[in-house]
Image 1 (cartoon, rainbow, N blue to C red):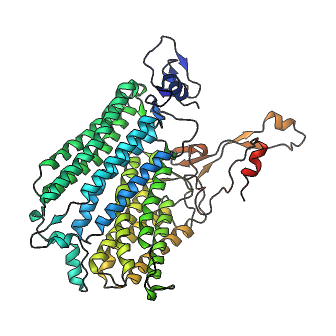
Image 2: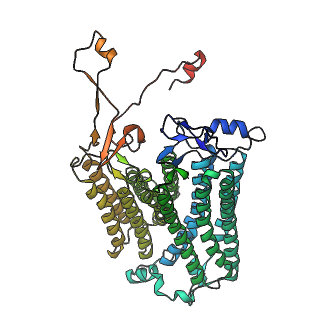
Image 3: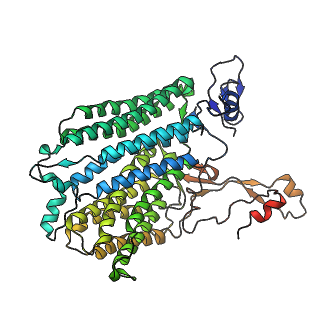
Length: 574
């Protein structure tokens, strides 16, 4: 289907019927991206007009015919965020306490929100022109500024020295370790921020709000330039503006408790706003006058690819934490620090295995495609998931350096692993399985439920006494390894719930000398889930299970391409 872009302003009297959708529309109501970009670009194509690459209208999805891959500057934006994650990882490792963990989570959200804005823009409207690249550059510079200021803020508690917020204290007494981690038993109302800390807080808030202002300006520009999408962009602008107004309060706070309260309210408004926007869009899409609504849509393949790549980059923080140089003679060889480092690598590998197989089924409908609620929930769950991975990386770094582990660090590591597993379990339930009911050795709900159970067990493990880093890492690796084995083996025998539609043999086949009679050709394959059916070509390779262990297909469709003689040896894989 030719990609159509809703941009026209005129409405001629004559009507035409779209061949792909069967809808009656004006001839100039839609125009192709190629025509728009070539016909209305400025400065020789350096600046391109606003476009919407895929959208919903009258119950149909209009999208580009060819799937888009990640652009080079999208990867640059991801690398900038990884650098920011590195800094906040060091902040998270300062002290293994609840207050420091919450401080990290709250400070982690604003950069995540800015990165999510960039991701949404590049997915829905990315033109890869000079304006887009300048936007990525400005956002990256502002992110670095926010991180530098936010990471320098320290919270001090009455009766405790400043050094307590910048070093990780070790203790051999379990009771002291529990008390150290659950720091909220102290008087949080008396917590203070230094005068330099308040200046850093104001500067960080300024960097964040300027980045959000760029996003607001962008949404308003698109609302003006694309009349048919004006309502959708104004709704996005409204729910972007409201949390920003809350964060203005940070310029006037005079205590750490007030600053944390503002952060919590701002984050909740941002998250709740996503769901409220989804409700408004859903209400508009189900009205009788739905033909008047044009709603920007996500390109699911692009989202999955970008989110997966980002998770890999965040997982790399753990690998960075386990890397070491054997300077001590006692550490040379496969023992000591090498053993702990190897367990860190195994832990990261198993977490990636569970994430890549988050659906825990052979064929499924991705949460983004399933429903507006599951789409938003799946996207928002990546915030606590990635934040917990950074906490895990900070904890593993401390465990790699020492044979012993203090109780506060154990709680820190346990909470990070617990949040990660619970998020992975919930994300699995958000996907809609298209497997045939009753297939598989272990039911899917049991396999996914084990993730949440394991997350709870991880959170409770510090209640058992242990001061060995190797044993601590080994237990978590054993738990993850057992889960991976159960899920992988439990999926054996699962098959897609295929609804096969057979067509009579074609006339040419009947006239063929090789025709034996009674032959039928298989129509397009469909999978059913309840009363809904999904064509195979509607699903990505990830949803069809082709990227799973034991995937159905090993080689895709082949086609012949004529190449020049000089390319023949150049393309050879040797």
